[in-house]
Length: 161
Image (tube, rainbow, N blue to C red; front, top):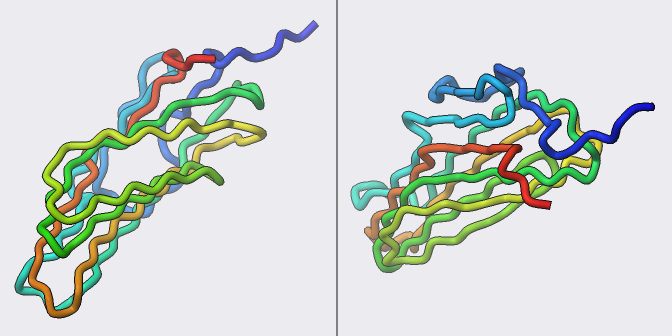
């Protein structure tokens, strides 16, 4: 008789099967139940000298996922920093497969952040992680926004039912 996989049975692949940018390092734990992706340049900057009122940056990578029961929930965490002046906004969209979270950082933000997305596995055999960063301001404004993502990480063992 086959046993039903438990959340702790889920494992990540050792390397991405796809990535849209080479500016990151992936560290998967020996037991393949946790990983950290560390970024060296996943950032946007809207500076006062720019005539552009909107800037964007997207990044995607795909990591194999195996052994997860359909009702498994895996927490993913995105951490970074935002600095925005009055009249400008920063935005973060984080998606794993078909599940997405959006965070808006209004003007006068100056903070580190950690954003969590609880991914429900369903029938997924991979985790397709996408980050979209964008900043905007009124066209005649010279307000500044700086937004970056430093890490994305997950740990299947820390799953809470």
